[in-house]
Image (cartoon, rainbow, N blue to C red):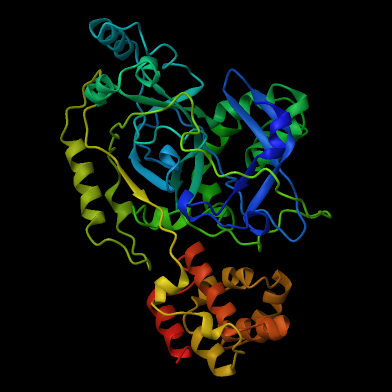
Amino acid sequence: MYESSLDKCYVDFNYVDKNKRSSNAESDLNVFKIEPQVMYKNEVLDVAVLKLKREKNKNFPPPLDLFDSLDPEKDDDKEIYLIGHNKSDEKNFNFGIGLWTPTETKMKDMEKFCLEYGKPNGYIGLDRKDRLVIKCEFVSGASGCPGVVIYKDKAYVVLVYIRGFPDFYYSKQFPERKREEFPKERLLQQGVNIGSVFKTMTENTMNLGLRNEIFPHEANLEQQASGQNPYAIGGASSFQNEKNLKGQETEKKSGKGTTCTEGHSETAIPDSAKYNRQPSYALAIDDRVDIDYPHMKPPGDDTDITLQHGHSQNIAVPRNDQNYTQETNLDVNKDSQSRMENASSEIRDMTRGEKSVPYSNPGKTQPVKDITIEEWIGNDMQAFKEKQLKELDLSILSKAINISKANSVALQLELSQSDFEIIKHDAQTELCYRILYKWRNKTGSAATLEKLIGILFLAWECDSECVFTEQLKSAILRVMK
């Protein structure tokens, strides 16, 4: 990576489909340029850390700030989710992915297969200790996407997707006909274990400040365990400490992390992935200046040189059925639960002896839909762009807010925590109405019906428990009459 070319690069957090890009990217609140400096890189791990430029009137989106380091021998029951742009196409999520442990027996079998196939061993490096091996459907253009697991509805990053095996399959010299005929069960993918990234950054004092910024929780756990200054080099054991404390720590982090799923349903993940990140989460605290975007071009069709083709199956892993019975306010595919449970039961029926190749049900990939408020309610919002809010409108819309999640809605409305506490203290009844009333008075003439509906819709997109789905739809249609 050449730092001189970074000033031509940018990140679009609202990018869903290359055919639906904004024509005026420089004014998009979700688009950020990149500082022309590589903050950290490790060629052995094949990872780099870049920094977004701070810009005036733009706030960074909420980060994925929860992490976990998986051990493939102990965590083979964990289900991994990937969210990214397979082949640089529309945003998708690939679920039902399990870990594949590269034992000595399996590695010898893979080498034997290559010899029988008339090729040199294409699986060298598959058993690296700093990597995790998976089988997924993501190939070209998806490198760098996060792999997450879900603990109590919070997303924990466990890997960074890197590459595929065997080497020769992804070579440009490998004939397309042979690629189509290649046994898909022999295709494997690999990601960098996020715990290895933390460990390598810990080994150099120059990187500790950046490490603590990226991994604040893990750095704090390490400090508590060692009694050291947070900038002291330790044993990078904080991920293990976190694993030991996972139960109690997760309860304490109810205000952190990115909520990805309700009961791990396959339809809740894309709703989190399509979350239109809002500026209410303001990480930037210093002054920023506007910048231009003279060199912007949309991503190419193939952004990954190593991974060009391929389509592989996923490992569907056994899961605890009781974790999948929670209800959700989202409109979900009614048979999704039974299909996932059927996949689990089929795996349980398989023999548990070691297999060189994991024959299993294929995982699934779903597109992350870029749904609009108009599509959601089936009406045009343009006529309400200038309509001022009435007390009756506030009353009707407030009934759709989940009072137990009222604080989250207040944050979406960009009310401060002190504002919320005052409202909560003063409002013995009708807390949700008082929140909307406060927002209207604070926003002034800009507090239109269209604006409030849009914010409540985004609150639902962000966390479906903030508002009740059907009640919100009904309330919107009532105030639009």
